[in-house]
Length: 305
Image 1 (cartoon, rainbow, N blue to C red):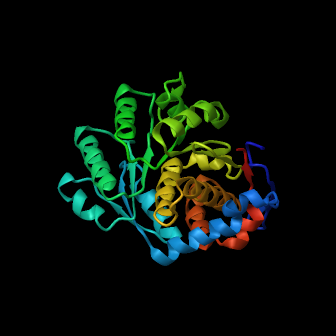
Image 2: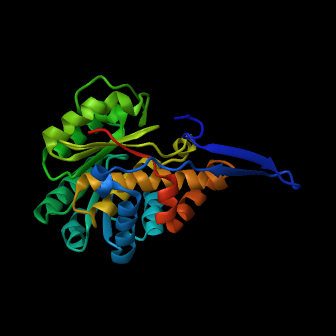
């Protein structure tokens, strides 16, 4: 995959007013074999339609940096977000939720207690839970908190970059703040081990996105490099995992749904963008308008196991 464009063709023209305009041609996705029928563009579109029809409440205990971005993304695909971390109301609010997303991006003691309480309440209700271990490996606090949440049981989907996944697996993953210095390929074995140990689906985000559980593995080859220039895109992927987990009972399927929708929407947004600022807005528009036609044209999904 071309790191600059994600493996698709992009042409640039200049209009009479001096502004640059971009056109992108998405190559057709690979043909889906019979074994992949449940993970086809049509199946992903069905789950996206279910999100829009049911508007599941996705409860986020997340970080200050990304609250608005992730809430807007959830709204754009048709879900209903709530961002709440006060311990006194968590149990009451989770009674209405379809999924819980825990994001450790901005940690302190009260937020950690809130995440632990929310996880316990979600586990008691058998709600799907997504854990985003932002910056695991960068500090002991982050790594220990993520490991404690993961070890408590009840996490349905674990989504992180390669460095975060390697840190949780006990490998020597290099981190740069909360960003990864490693490719997603480097964390495949670590992800397989975490999926087996904690009986959850694991997503390793990067230039390609790996979605793994104990017996299956998929690679989503969508997305563009500019997505890494917009804060909170990884956190947005975790939030979308929560939305799809609320309507799709197979955690791996929900993870594939989220990463496919993220990647294809990112490519469509890039086609209309002039830079990271306009792409952030175009990304929300692409999520809102995404449908089966765009997924069938753009999805590049591989079955690895």
